[in-house]
Every structure is written in C-alpha cells, then in structure tokens.
Length: 123
Image 1 (cartoon, rainbow, N blue to C red):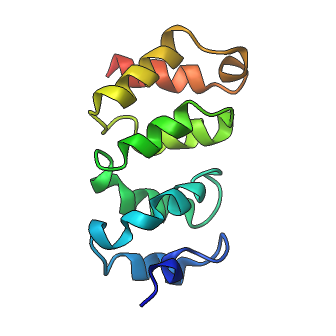
Image 2: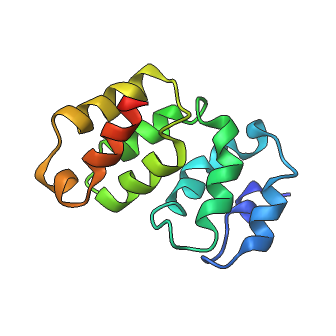
C-alpha cells in the first residue's frame, strides 16, 4: 500500500482518517506534515479526528509542531495549540509556546494565539 493513500482527499474524508488508525506511527511518519495540514482549520470535519489520532504521537511530531508555531499562519498555530498544547512536554515546543505567550507578534495577539499559549503556560 502506498502510504500517500492515507492522506485525506478533502475535509470530509473521514473514511481515510479511519484507515489511519490501522497503522503504526512508523508507517505514517512520512505523511505527518500532510496530516498536520488538515489542522489548519479546526472547523473542518476531519480536523478533530486527525488531531485525536496524532495526539499520542505529539512528542514524536514535535519538530513539525515547532515549524508550525514559527510560521506566519496564526489560525494554524491556534488550532495546533488547541489540539496538542496541553499534552506536549517537548522542551522546544514549550519554548515556542512560552515565546508566543510572553512575546507575541501583533498577528498572534490579533488572532488570540497568545491567549491560548498563556492558558497552556498556566496549566
């Protein structure tokens, strides 16, 4: 099976998300960045199921999470923090969450990303 077939085709592709559950992290590791793209909007139907699937692997996907948190996509940062922020213990991710909480960009402030980061820091 081509692992790329486990990348959802659209925001309603819950069937493919279910197929992900049959695979180990090692199997899906090459498509993690593709899966994280489906967390760019928390309102997409597949966003929550993908986040739930990836949550147990949050430490393993920490480098990808850091890339997102350093990006300019504030909505994506917000969704990533909502999905993984309270569970992740990786020091690089926590450092970036702390940066957002203590020294946010104006865009992070405008989109409330710093508020989520503060909540994570306070728990």
